[in-house]
Image (cartoon, rainbow, N blue to C red):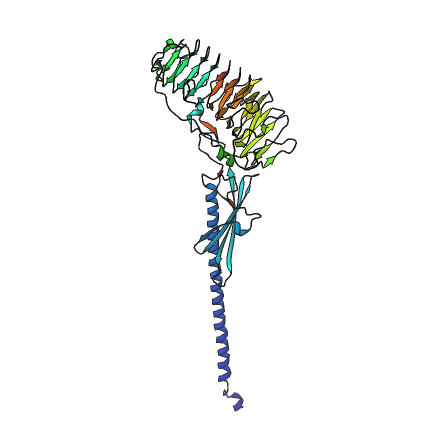
Length: 504
């Protein structure tokens, strides 16, 4: 019993047990400490990778929002079908980011993707974090008027005895600006709200500017050079009372007095950037229709060349904008498209929106009364032939010149070709045929030619503006808002909205 109750020999087993317990405890502590360090390192790497990925999305948004970039073109590398090494890469502190974007022209939005890459602190592997977002693009359809020439019938030619000539029986209420010399042939009755002539003003027999009835029938007139009537003596300078020369003028608004003012305000003719809009027009050669009708109701071709570059070439096929069938070409949603050129042959209605480019010539030759809806600029590398009526407002069988508001309904054509080309005469960029009417804005690199008995309502800019017998130009309201793409105005594009649908 004494031996069984004794404690001799227990020290060693107890010591061994304590050592085992302590060893397990220390090993567990080391293991958990190491794992925590690994976990903390991984978490930190993921956070850095997320930060790098966010930087990639910020870079993508910066590209879309750059004022000189068109955010409705594929200006960042595609994600879909494009290997990651071909995405944009940005090296940053702690790692790098790859970023890309898929442009959906049908819905006018971008799906952006960015991946941040960080070297793992635990081994040779790489930690990644992927994030995505959507950026909706809102179209810009109009812009404030930048060049005052679009409030005038503006003839830019200089260097001839008659830089601008108005022919027999022409009448007109459009404001007129002549950069050179103006000649009025027999029986021309010019009655614009204002007339600005930087050069000389030469009137043939029975021609007149305004009327002497009262101050309201007189014309606010500026002449920078000389003036004469019927081949008589020149007044040099052409200033003060020139009633004897059939220039029934008034000056010094708003408290008008009789007389011609010699201080002609100076502004330059607008310049059309055909090369830039060949690249950026929507729809156009580089941005096809997202919604398009199929044969036989196909829309006009936007690029008729094979080299994919802008060339002023009158040999390109002539595109009919008002054929005997409907067609649809739209970029963006139906309710708020970025660009559209569509035709309803039953109602004779042309729907236009944005800046459109046709690398060739165009015609409206159905001889009918056609109406357009929308705000747009149509660029043509070739010429324009109009035989019929194209109006922003219609009353009965004619353009409604009184109701049309050019600030809310304006179609501008800018033509760079020079005839002869089809029905367009030699030297002309735009020809409005006999008895035809147009309501909108016209820009011609060459001559802008109106046939006999034609009517115009709206501004026009050309080297020479040829108004044949019995042409009438209507007075139009002051223009302060123009379609985006109007020549002479700053080039602006659709605007990206703040990102949404962030994930990752």
